Length: 342
Image 1 (cartoon, one colour):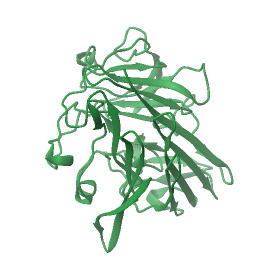
Image 2: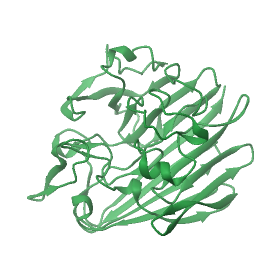
Image 3: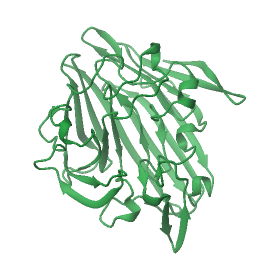
Image 4: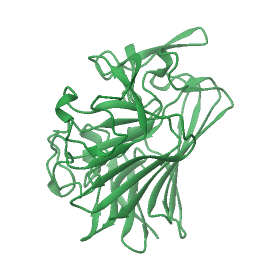
């Protein structure tokens, strides 16, 4: 079932919320502003809980930081120096993270209206499309992007991406939801356990830009190949997790790469994806004065983001995943979050 309701005004345009639901208490609310996941309610031991952070009205999404639940692009994560060279030309991007470019720039996909088309049925879905013109935020090529949110029969939320350009460009799309499987207003996530099929990580510099080194996770706090709590090695990270973990080469294609579990809440989230990496972010800067839904205050490490994507700043590092989308080619990718009670 799909329910549509107003969610505020931006300029003179009405923001719409689309609530996708299936029997059993599993439902997702998605906004046509930023193609944003505003809530995700999952059946738990003691009833259904909303496991993603977000706001009660559009003002939070307009004025608070953090990209809560948004679809980010053209290029998720960071690009060093807010510039890149392509086909013999240098392109200058908007520097919105010091001297670097972050999550698409000044506006990005996260603060744009998307065209929404609901698709009701046993697996209700919302198809959102966006046109990014040549030169927007400094990127070359006209780009048409589509993301489809779908509730699946496996108690999953599937996000499928499709993009096409008429000129060579760089592309890196992700969803920036923050998860707390005990409920977004339940406190710290450092007791959540995480398993990640990642055997290397991108070593960052002081500006969180990759140095170019892909270091094995062995004997580091970034080794989640055996599940452990987020808090176990937290003090060894140098300020918290904000690192790109690179998935192992085998298996390949769409498969399970991550599993987040909340022992006290009894909910497990398995993440299936065809992307080569994930940005693990433990909400180290989550202290915006604008409160979350229900007035719950933002606090450090009260949620965790698992942003499946290509490697950051990849155009500057030979050997990183290839983010070049050539004219006429089609980019396709899917990430699915599946939930279980244990």
